[in-house]
Image (tube, rainbow over all chains, first blue to last red; front, top):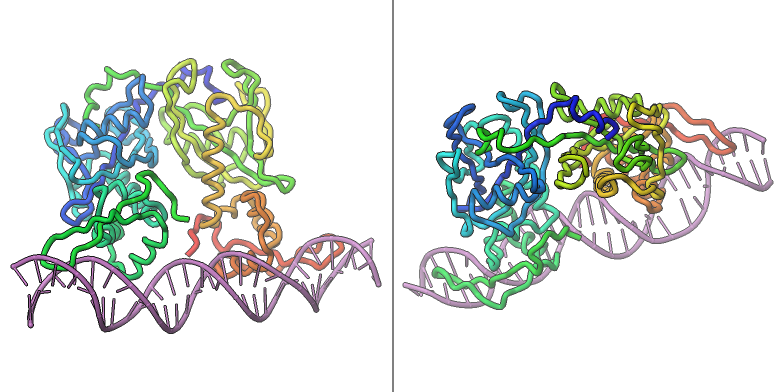
Length: 224
Length: 224
DNA sequence: TGAATAGTGTCTTTCAGACAATATGCC
DNA sequence: GGCATATTGTCTGAAAGACACTATTCA
């Protein structure tokens, strides 16, 4: 901050937050994208986001965008990385702080906002071409998500409060894109001491009912 | 980015980069701080940084600040986190993107720049009070550094190209603030297959000379 | 030969991963 | 009884951690 007195010498860039909203739907990892209603990249899909207002923090801005886009609050939200290449937006210099949110599908109510014609969930394996450098941002987010479910309990924010262990396993499989061994998975999950049995069972379908579990804490906990 | 057409409705904040420059000196983990020559927080110590210019990327800005402050280039540099609370700078809204650089002590040439009266290395265990929210930024950086040396080879950027295993161990001990077992440390480091013997020995002091090692790659590699 | 650091091996414990049979409910 | 999913344990190999003695150089 050695040059702060020279503020006026340097033009101020626009600052936005972009929020990658992940959810599990139909046994797939999906992400919310919005269709741009205006140029540039009109009619292309993009990561939802918007300007940071002068009286709000970056996290508040991300929370607001998340809520505007999906009606959801009180979910897992994490700052990822800040992208600021001078030419990433053709109109003017725009620096964007990216966030990732994890949301249970049953809470999402997609709503198109002013400059957007449509908001939709996309399978992360089948994304359309994205506007700006949003593919790069998406790739970064997915990498972070995959890394982080390995050593934290953040999946609590992708599930309903109570769930079967097989559902939990499915979330891991869908995010990591690989099959896991049922016995090893359950052994490990239970040994972490982050889950507790709800006492209730899930009678559903013509088969043995499953115990419903829940996370002891619905906040970020690092494994060991 | 659903509201980008409304640019003018939102005032643009100033954007700076702050760079935490870590080095190992005198068997301690140290960080470069600069003494502020102007208000606010005049005469207090701060993390070096400055405005992002309109034609440079964030990383270029960080690289430039690093070079201006220490004369160093081509070292490990990583973006950390972006701090943007509305009131973090009392003058105007300033959003800062923090970076961490790891520099071998023998490359550092501290030079005070325009708005700074002095630049100095501080033991990370004995920091003075810091300006702005810089203590928070420092804490974040130190946490990241400690985490990251556990699973990457980034210490290559804190050492001279060739080093004794005991020096390498000392770096880990100083960063992690704990003693390590010599046999286990060497066993693990060598088993990672990231080091190679230089063939040369370090004759120094009245004792058995040590083999000098070097990293096979002087770029980031994740363990396993 | 004494001081100082370099260099080395074994045992135990823990954790990850491979692997298949029985249990329970519904129809 | 048949179907579908839930639930459970053992063995093996790899890695981490505890732990102490010998080797080499210089003064």
